[in-house]
Length: 82
View 1 (cartoon, one colour):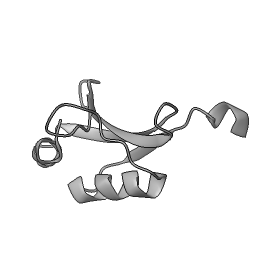
View 2 (cartoon, rainbow, N blue to C red):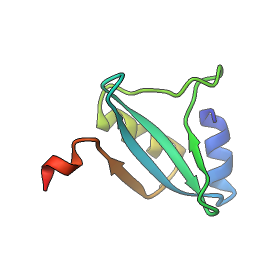
View 3 (tube, rainbow, N blue to C red):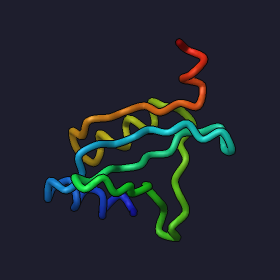
């Protein structure tokens, strides 16, 4: 789902959460949105390829461009932070 589609769904109160996921393959961060039915929508470019951001801050900024959506950070290294 491209940025404009995310904005539209957020304005319609369809999206309830943004998940920021650490992608170990690209060493970056991807953004997935969850709707009120539990469906997952990755943020993609116009070709349908998931977007990857260099830092957590960049991924958070993209979510803020869409709206004031609650965010959850999923890191593959979360298990080692306990």
